[in-house]
Image (tube, rainbow, N blue to C red; front, side):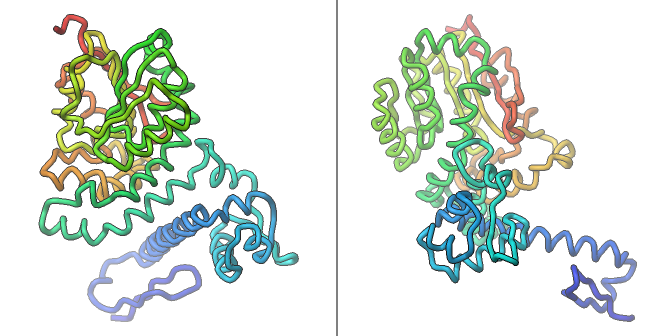
Length: 378
């Protein structure tokens, strides 16, 4: 049999000889090989974006075109590293390079996606890729032996990364785009009610709500002490007297006095015991009280997610974090793509009525579930 050569671009990468090439469409194999290498290229560029956040180079380049020397001076970085980093981004199409002047530019349309505080800034998403890469070995062990990696093993880095991922979204969307999906809840918040945020992380969402609705009181609960410390620090810095935070497992959520509303932002799919937590939230609400779950917008059926452009990211993050932290404690292992169908069933099983699900405007990754404890419950 003649050797079969698979090429990507202009470089010959692999020569395959043997029976494994029998019946293989060589052109299709070459095309797929190029696609795979495209994924590898994207992965490496993800690390370059992460470096740009950590070093301040992206923000510095957003100020205007610069040579590698000028940018290094702006950012207080070593020029030789900056030059190599810029070369990676230039060849990756993220920055533009002018050979005549040897200057690099971050176009404004790219800058809005990689810098700033708006929800358009997707650069912080690179941090989750960098973080989760550290756990591949441990997850591989879990594939063979079962179990998983406990949530504590991801901290404290995970706390900071998740804060970066969610902060811009909450700043941009919580009050103006998420709350309007919850029916009469904004009016009730204006009048003054008692609210819990379950799995509050660094508490930024609860603090935003507390600042916007001073007549209401908010309590954030999370199992991570480092996250709760940051939540308290922000509340103090903002001078909030209506937001408090406690380290607490959600299965022990206080039921007396009850809450008028409970929020759960990107929390349920990570839980060891989601059924138990949802039932506890139900019992902790006043009759007619509202539960708002902000979570990943996907189907519970893989077939429905095949065309979802973010599905590979969702399932990969699940494999390397959300699924394994639950399975590490023999939990339900919902996974990030637990999906609308399963969410509706779990909420109904927990006793919530009138559950609705809503797309979040300009947010393809998440949706909002709104349910109520029946008014006749006692």
